[in-house]
Amino acid sequence: MPRRPQDLSCPSAQPDMEGARVIGVLSGTPEEPRIAFLGPGVQIDPSAASRLGALEPTQVFRFAAKCEESHCVHFDGTRCSLAQRIVSQLAPTVDGLPVCQIRATCRWYAEQGGDACMRCTQVVTMIPKRNDALNRAALAGAESDAAE
Image (cartoon, rainbow, N blue to C red):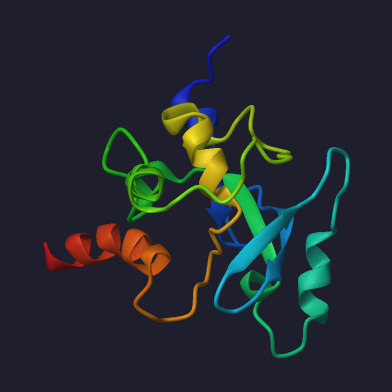
């Protein structure tokens, strides 16, 4: 049974969003960050974020939460423009679908299918400011909305 749009999850959420939960841990390098997604049934208590010292939760964890739709700069009224840009502008980082706790409710998967999943491991919520493909894909929607 297809999910109703209002039941979909954002796979790149902020920790303070409704229903936020940790779905992955940052790994890789600063130049090529990657997400190590948590396996089925693995949970990290969100209160762990309070023990990170000077680090922001999004510098350590990847969160999913209820998609905020029209309250999000990346929502164009019907779809997530960020997911669309990620698929069109970023190269895949994996050959198969990665482990994912939210695929059944993921907005990116619902709209872009496995193409989004194949790029998802490189998406970090708070990315370092530099001129790379991830920044260009992430900021394109925010910059055009700010200009309006």
